[in-house]
Length: 563
Image (cartoon, rainbow, N blue to C red; front, side, top):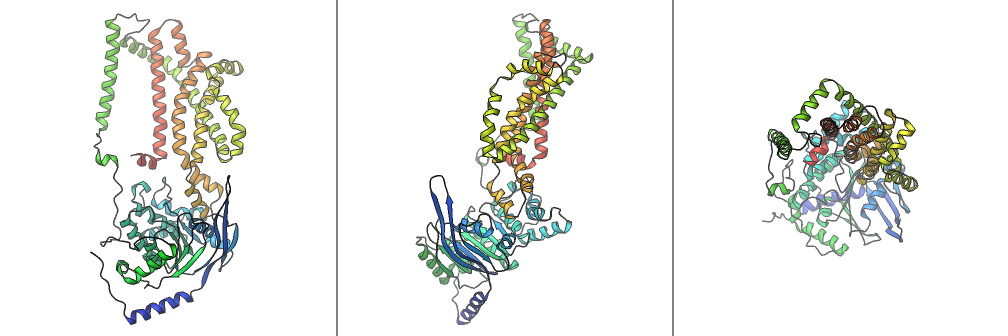
């Protein structure tokens, strides 16, 4: 069922003409003169923009539309100061072009939210960069802006707990928090479904009306450009040039009914003709648009295929059952085949030996030594891996120089190096700690480089758009972004650390679980060997669980995302 059409009367046309006259009288805020952009690539230079010139009036809603690859996003990034044009100039009528960059809020195609921050923290980010210290009034200001974009009550939600439309509203709120003069929006609704996109268009019109901001909006949608804009800048195919600047002479209080009017369709046809596009010029919105309505996220495989749910009690019961079955199988093998205890002792002999060594303190003494070597070596290797990995992640040149030597050092078998390390550093703790650090260094080093380089480019550009320093980027983006990769390396490294400590104790030591294993094997005391092996296994499991626990504490957002 279509929307009702109300014909325009003469009085209405006079009002619209007067309104459009006011638009023309608005002061020019930004002027682009002969903007050109050439990207240097390995194969050949690529020209994205050529001789682009137009103005942006203060307080107007200006849309930029054109074919894919014509330089719309490039143009917006030039206005926002994220990149510098190769030709032409951007003139800001209220100061230097640097003042324009400082007075611009950027909304990217993707919401570009920090997944480790909740809604409130994401919205506060520009203020943190600008002021360094957040006051109570800053939080109150942010809460008011969140209320304006209809996100009251969602301040403490992580991004992965929000719908697509809600994420974009957070991005808009973050752009508004510094009260910018200009709002630059790069296809912010392109990834949303049609119903949500329609809703967000009217939300944006409401926000624009309430704030009075100057908005430069990039879009691929012809009806969206007509619906939102005072003027539409139409670009040609690459290299992008201005084909036409079309003034949209529709009433400014636009609602869903305007879409079905002949005037709206005429403007859609004009833009389509200028672009040479073959669309039907129609856009459809849900007739029951409700502010604050939450769009359900897309269905996952779990929504179609039932996943068995196991309670914690059931899970631990299964663990105990498997353990008891293993002990029973072990006991059955030794009894059935009458295996001598010095080859495979029955489980009860190992159990009593464990209690004996635990009672006389010998087991705790050797466990402490191995634990100390493991943790100290792990921390040393972790520190060196992180400190060396970061500069290599930031410098391809430094990586090319040092990487061959680092890789060559890692290819040498650590067991072969262990005797040399003991000769150089002695039989004390130093040789074992050094060996552990050498073993754990490489996985942490590699994961540090991978983690830093996996930082979302959009997040880095977001920080650049807020004027963040390199230290702010390192602290607020690069380190949190690299944490998942780092902890993957930590979990691998902590198990290798136990192995490194034992290898060092095998070669030369007078204490530790590795030493206890070698000593007991020399006496053919197999139950004691089993005790040492079981204790090493328990130690490795506990350390791995500890690292996993710290990971959950530091990255609750990541755990929620995985779930």
